[in-house]
Length: 319
Image (tube, rainbow, N blue to C red; front, side, top):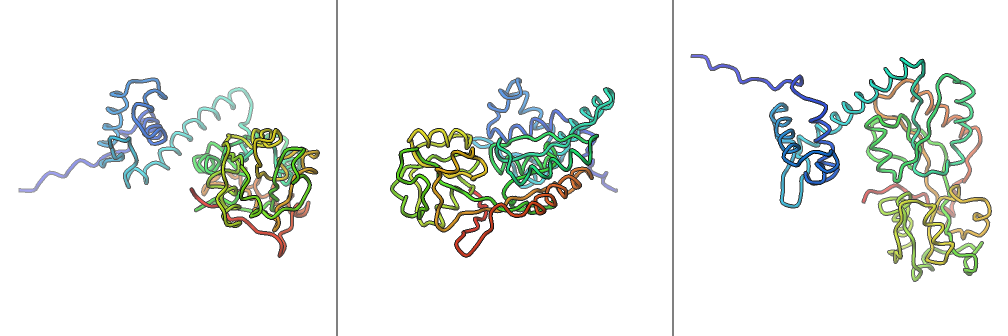
């Protein structure tokens, strides 16, 4: 007698709410925090996640006393869950914009509020050549957050250090130089300094150039671990604290006002890092065209900082 076939899980049984619960649970690391974020009860989150796992046909989360994390299947599922949520938001936004006779702007994400100088010529050219395709520039606190947003589609184009393990298109904008910011009365003002000579000083880290970014890589190249006096979210806050004498900080020169650039100390050898523009693996055609324009116009302007034998090109590193 033939055995009846097992029912095959169907994607039609999935809901956007379940996907949102999964993505939020992984991001928060605990179901209690996910429930608070979603404004529901923890049993509701747990039940919906169990329902999702039954629909998919395999566990997606490891549940431990210290929290939750994705299983191997869950890690494979997550990028598609994020994309589905993004597509739903995109569909809603596109429909509403069309109903009002508007087009959704291209979203260009950067790793700091102050626009890199290499980005401005391309934005100007795109605005002149594509008056019906506006651009919205969005700042992100770190390279990792920007990468996640471009991968998920919440940003169309990313501008920042070269992304890690990236399947999409990556184009070089140029390179930017990192400088040391200090108080006005500090003996370092306006000097060239060897970073290893500053091993005894206190430093202010920030997420735009903080742990896992060029801040860590710069000190690794100099051969010491910095004594961190404070860590703040933005480079602007780090610069303000450094100017007040709390400690030194390391920032991209383009992030400083012209007056502060004159008093910044320059590491020897020079510390530079590649600045890129990138898109997701399957971007909108407009996003590809915009990225190409940004890169082309930056090259036409010429490199803002030229690596030489007295420069160290910093590679992005993971935490």
